[in-house]
Length: 115
Image (cartoon, rainbow, N blue to C red; front, side, top):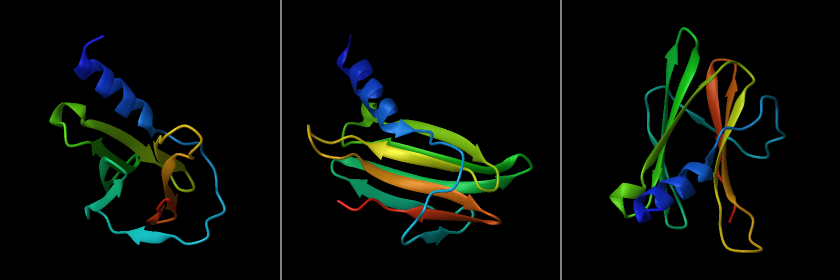
């Protein structure tokens, strides 16, 4: 397995589509259409935006490290009340850092991880 392929495999597994349904959320922030959100989860930089389409809200997540060959992109289309999760694994015994992205009616809500 090449180093580049291994890096892509690790990052691809770090960006995970979540389950459909509602999750109890303590504090959410709302993202406007076509406005980027940038977050840093340990060594992983994450950029997220969405664009309304006929099929639903197309959510685009790009994640990577300082190594340009590690960048991956995940695209998901969310209908109302659907959710996706960006999950970045950490060290042994540490919980993953998770960014929950949920479509609520005509808005997209985000809950950033608490480290």
